[in-house]
Length: 411
Image: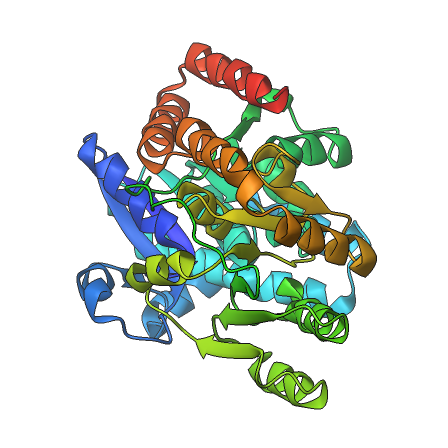
């Protein structure tokens, strides 16, 4: 049996976690799902997954006391040396690592007696530390999947998490190169690229577009890292240039109030609609009603939203950051702008608007690219094969996967 842990499960914005669990089960792997937090929103269609998930909270007092005792286990000596005597982390981060060590010992107590032979953690945040400690105390191995901000923004103690994991899966060649460049002591063969993917829908008819009005769409959590404020400021400049447009922003999050205020201050209430949370099954209607799907994030892995838009034959515009250029190839499958460059962003929008009908071949190419390299069914199968291979130690399969990923990097 393997234990599969995530920070919050189930989650509508991270469907790939449940997908990976189901694919492993389909191949005969027994999986125990665990989650640090309970989901804040209770989605009716995810109730079955909630029922089978092992949640940390509320904590069991008896297991918590056992965990406190196990924190003195000799196998954790090097962990404590890293916490207190090495690195440049602040005192508060060191104390948090100590608290997470206690949670890791607690997780080990939860798993003890369940015949768990391996733990996988999705994302490299503090849950990865919990997993590392639990695996150490249970005498088993663990693996981790890294996406974007958990590697590029919030990489606290990532050196030791990578050092002790059996395998690290990551979602782009950019991420793999970043890991090998910034953590040179990590063996290259343990860092594997596992591309995400989306379902390939029936194709929409060719886009109809009125030259009078450009319909913009942005989908994503309203969080500062998504930088929707950049998009809103760009909309103000488009309005000043007398470009007719509408902009729909789908999603909710902590930045909602600030974005509402910015829209009001810039007099864009007639042009911009904050649509709030939209169920995933409703998103095709939004893609169908859009001309240009925009991403303005400061940090990403490879966003599923861009994959979905391209699979629906929608033109996309995104910043040239992290692994996005592996999906959006300028002039072939979409458009990129230099991150933070408002002038370049506006030039791209103008170019797309003025030559919209001439971009139909690009939209077809985008759909084909997603189907070939970011197909959910294909990539889930590839992930399961890689995962089972690392469990069984079949290195030849892992080497073949690295060779295939290097081909994608050359595109």
